[in-house]
Amino acid sequence: MGIKDRIFRIEDCTNGYHKCLYLFGIKFKYTKGKGLKDRINSFVKKYNFVERINNRITATVIGANIIKEKHSKTFPKFKNCNEGKDIVLVASGPTMAYYKSLNDVLHIGVNRAYKNNNINFDYMFAMDYSIGEDTIQNIVNYEGAEIFLGSFITDTADSWLSKYVIPLKYYNKENVYGYYSEFPAKYGYPDIECCGLMDFGSVVFGAAQFALYTGAKRIYLVGCDCSSGYFDGTKNNIKGAQFLIEGWKKFKTYAHTYYPDVEVISINPVGLKGLFKDVYTKEYADKINLNLNSELHPILEEKDNVCVVE
Image (cartoon, rainbow, N blue to C red; front, side):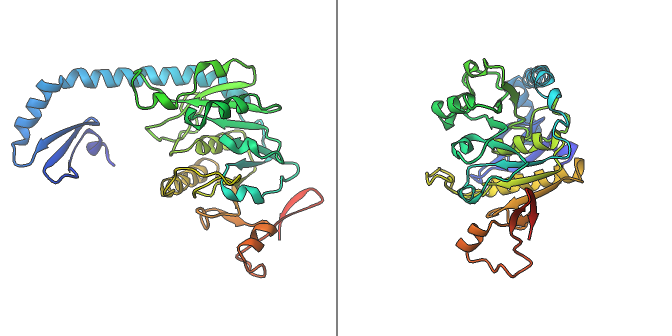
């Protein structure tokens, strides 16, 4: 979308009766056939357009300063702290059950990944209070990990985002750090000391961006299935995960742009098959009857504590 389209554009509404006019990102409806000039003039008077633009700019500036203030305290100590190391990013999709913890790697877990007792996590990320108060408390109490709790820049108490915001009481421990997501803007900037973390509908993207920021040599994706259900057999409400796949495509572009030497590898891919380098564990390959003699299906193994692909 070009600059002109961001300032002014017109679209048909889904009801087929109205058109939608966007001025500086603010949406107005008007009836087809009416004079556009007259409608714009009436909108300016009715909605006090200048004041609304001013309020939006003010909120954006305030939000940017809030993010910079928080992130300048949270992230600088972690910049390149894992240079040359491999990081396994663990989400809680069903294939996570087939992952055996690799040696000599770091692990980042998101949301309910902490339930896997076979993995010792070095970092934990969460940013959605709707996953449950008990889950947030268990993440905060997870021993041996640095905990990152995310939030949104929301300036009104009745914002629809309010029910997802993690209360401040959970940020009171030394190893718990706060950060902000770029939602709903969904940008991805490498300067996370002053910008929000990328957010394409899941906390996993901010965690992946953090892994790059810490200087990872390779990033393995585990349980990032982009499908329904969790590794422990419980269900979720996701009917389709195409939006997550689109998010990973954007992350791939981001990683290739700013960190072209970092290899991203999907372990037991489902929705992400073919997007990054794909490898499989022997147990999962047997479950889905992969042809192990095919070069298209490399198997992940460890030899002498070194991760290799057969």
